[in-house]
Length: 448
Image 1 (tube, one colour):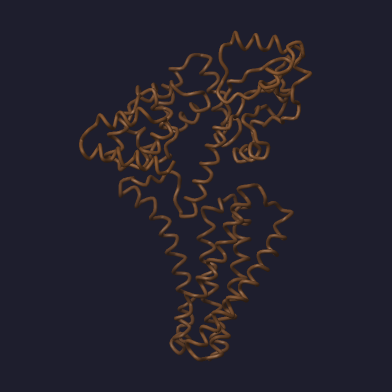
Image 2 (cartoon, helix red, strand yellow; image 1 turned 90 degrees about the vertical axis):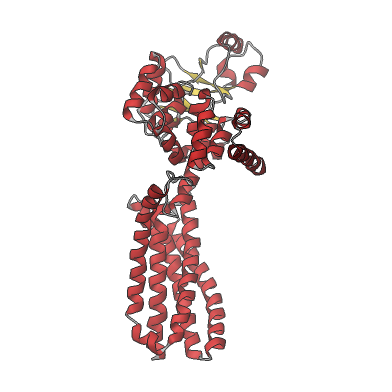
């Protein structure tokens, strides 16, 4: 798939470079909206704008939804209100809710006014919930049946209806007040005798998702239960209000993964690889400034041992080794903790167990590499006391890295700060400062 995408992108670039636009149009016509979005995101701005103007207007809405946030925002700013309203008109309600969230308020109002009364009511019901909740993810296009009707009646009803919403694997069974009771899978509907009642063959085990459930928890439920679709209900009375389908959950998983990876570099999902230089530099400047402050903190610690370094230059040579090994060990622990939080595997009951486990791992690895580094230091500088200092500093910093790797994400979580965003900076600061302090402090005590 990657090779195919690369070849398509190469053909488009060759066509654009040659000035032949007809091959570009033909290539775009053969792609689905998601593939077009991938290609647009991989083009510099001038070429992206040219290709975007060739996209079929009927696909504009779907393509925009599949684009990274930064790319989508740049294209939306260059579109007029009529184009945006037309693009929105091609979307399902759940996708339209996501789309409207990224529009200027005046344009969003125009989109709302362009909808008929039923669609406007459905859209407002979705927009009433947080985009990161089950209510914000759901679509209201549910097909419901009553438990006291026969399968034959349901089949005739579906034939009269003519079609089913996408990703429909089951119908939802509700009572006369709209309360969710269970699901009727399509395979049972088609294979069981027509005279059987829905209540006889329905599945009562599929739990509904409350509208307030967080998007990550929804994704976890789909993963653990192998769901294609799931009902969404009000937590107060269990009334069915919509459904979530697997395509929406895949979007959540992809967005979360992108958020975590970008956050660890101090970037956001708005970062566009081919964004203009000035806004890109402005977004990254803040993160670089934070790192500069932490670097000065490490430099301050080193400065307190200037006399020691002057007398024992070998310590300056070995400082990066101790700090780097601590940073790598801490990053490994931090990454595992962030992953555990993302998968809901970490809670108050197992944090201390994880701390003990990571500390033991750090001590085992620290002892191993402390011996290795001490031997190298002895062979290099021919000084046994120096080798002892380096080994002890290495072991101590490995233990500190493990402690920080566990406590930093736990503390940030309690403070309501995303560990993926701030964890690496805090961790690096601790491992650098503590690594330098351990090496130089022990060197001052033992070697002088």
